[in-house]
Length: 288
Image 1: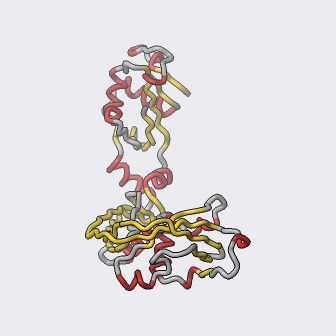
Image 2: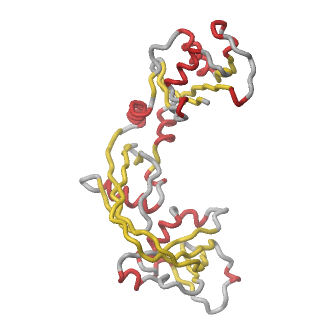
């Protein structure tokens, strides 16, 4: 259903307007599952370096862990959910003690045709690599399952270590000829690209339990990020009802009731809220 302000006689507007001056408002049911999917990431869905650091933090009595390296934890989400009991944790990361060292970057071709490999070229197996080289590769790809993804054909990896013994033990430092590696029954061709200055950083990951069920998480997110639409006028109630039924549209200059709603939902500074509570229910908001 599409409604326009022209249907509301108290602040009539044209039934059509150009896209550049059209205000659009819609509200869709926000279920606990929908809010969980929107604002949290499953632990298994985090990239390798982040997943390891968060797991260590969750296992620690303090709820914190610290790691150091070129590949640093980067959750790109404020909340992580662990299963199957669905416990939700807030994540915070702090970087410090950065130093510069030399990094060696390789391009990696995935699932290389065996016939293209020259006779006599050594193929190393992944388990034979030093542990820190294996961690660099896991962190670079993020998810080793991508090795078997049909359209995943290449990635790059940087080998950079602070400790002298790790540099000395690395198979990839200093740079050398093209290397072949068998990882999870997949042949990789690794070609040195460049040597450059990179940063080694310490990162502390802190976790805080915020909810023990999707419903609790829904309320937690709503309290922190949602807007409660209370004390609305009768005309604004009509607008909200139309937004719930379908999409409410209005042309500029906007009516006073619609302008008031837009201001409450943050449209003026381009930071419109995504979650709205109205008449006891939560909705995903789309406001343009």
